[in-house]
Structure formats: structure tokens, C-alpha cells
Image (tube, rainbow, N blue to C red; front, side, top):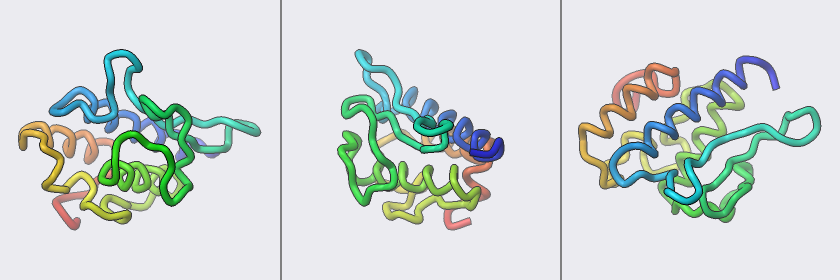
Length: 129
């Protein structure tokens, strides 16, 4: 995997960490820590997602054993596409991505999460932007 993809993987993990420290603490559990993307396999070229409960999850599947549910599974798929392509993919896999109004997080937390996502290049502007 080239350095730009690795940079995007690190960027996505920053967003996941921000999500895990706020609101309902999606992607986090006290006993297992925070979920994250990582590389493994032949020459560390295969992208995987580490789920806080399910363990190693294949983000290439239509739906795998992700413990986070449909909304966050769609976000994981958006993150995977961003890591691999560098394209702005928020909301591509449904549920509105980081602009989804159904997270149950306080608006100030969502603004902070979106600010990190913009800072690292995942979001490029306002909703639908």
C-alpha cells in the first residue's frame, strides 16, 4: 500500500478515535479499547477493520460481523473507500455518514467529529459537500 493510503488510514483512525471519545462512545469499549483500521497479510497490503467486540472484520464484505450496527457499518465502508481511493466518500454507503442526524450524539460532539474529519481530509465541506 502506498504512503498516501497509509496516511489516509491514519487519518481515518483519528476520526474513529474522536468518535470513540465523545457522545455514546461508538467504536469504544472499556475492556477492549477503540476499534481501528490496520494493514495485514502479504506485505501488509490487505486492509482490515478491528471491531471492539467481533475482532478482525473484512471491510470488503457487504456485511460482516461488525458490532456497531448498520449506520456505523456504512461509515466503515465509507472509510474503507476513502483509504483505498482518496475520494470523498462520506455517505456513499447510506445513512448520511458523518452528517447523519440519527447518531444520538450532542450536536457539539458531532461538530467536533466533523472538524477532525475536515482537518484530515475526509470531509471537504458542509453536508453534501
